[in-house]
Length: 226
Length: 330
Image (tube, rainbow over all chains, first blue to last red; front, side, top):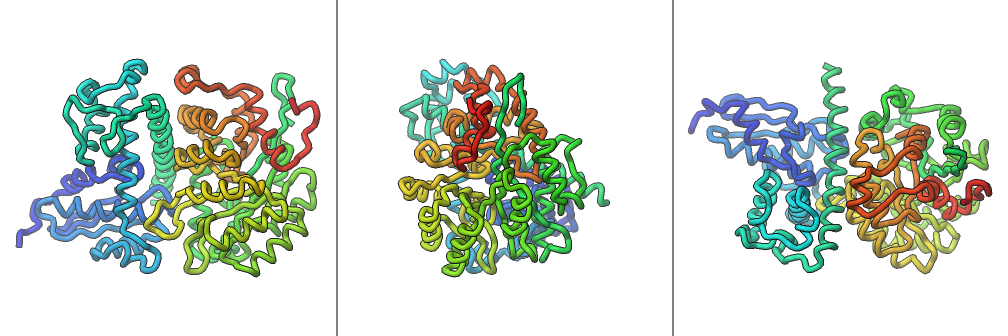
């Protein structure tokens, strides 16, 4: 038994920084979803509060499960429990994730498939949004002529795009085309492609804008109550 | 009517509620969670001077609603969209019967929409037909994510839902307002999925049904826009989109530009979603609003006075056959 000596709250929070909201493609920690971290030896308790009581149970589950796994990977951590606060299905999700049950087991009869399909769908959306952001600072005429990855500016947006390409197993070499679909297929109609990824970026931003606004309200109320 | 530089603007608010979410009417913690979630939206996106206390927000008197919409809010005609939620509220959250009381007192100012739920089966179908005949209903509000017993929602493509859509076509209930929300069954699928709208919009085009997708399916705007491009009978209901004008003006411009490009100004409908937000400030600001120059350039769209008139009232008036005074028709 390796003792839990030395696990710090800071290490746990850093691990949570790497966990993304699958729908927003942003870090739970940076979104402000981490409501609390408690460390006692090798036992860690993580509390999450999402922007609304009605946040979809599937995404909520994925976040709670990803948070559990990320924290478990911190050296010295032996047990992790995750509590989802102020959520309509908080009891089922907290208990299910902490007891290592599957989503199907936690919601018997309400699920026909695993959550992996949903996760993949939203990774593809994240792929498009990151591509759009990587192109956003470039002159339109330049983008319209087509670009390789090597021609993208050295910027955080480019690195984020390369990271999701690597995650999806796509060519990340400098000579690879930058305007592709999530399977690596180069866009043939560049204008239509740009229209489409712009729309996807605006659509995903709706969530981020709403979630941040709603969470601010919830957090302020929580503080006022204390 | 709203007046803008001497022009008369006819306003139809295509989505308003008269709800009762008071603690006495709440059936369980979901009823409390529901209204608190609405209240958070209200607070997150309203200007400070338009934020209500929670007690008023849970249940507001009819005089207040009439004042906010018609006396102070410039609305000419408001369309009631019922939302039952009987699993959360003892007498329902916002029923046709509640709305009918106000409609009777202000017959020219309110349009009464109905609702149905395919899980109510044959009996529900009969009841719906009876309600349509009694109230002269021309539109329905459907809430596919509504809980009912063990069920967590339904789809427009369900066989029984098609029976109800057939009935709508038969009775001339041509305006089908669809609201998407989280927790639709099954839980492993995207809760905001709008692909069922795509299917029925195609199937019921010739039958004359129009599908108004409330809040433009946010946060699935791209799915909605692609459907609207292909289906001429799909419309954008702007509830939830409008109030971004105050809290997130740059983002509002981006969404509006996308809607103007993909859907077009003939199929966008103004809505306050009262009492989520108040029409007064939404209308004042929208009439004073101009798209930023860079967005106009980049997205290749504009927002003209003529388009604003369509969005604020003329489009909805056409869908519902609401007479528009001559001075506001141009």
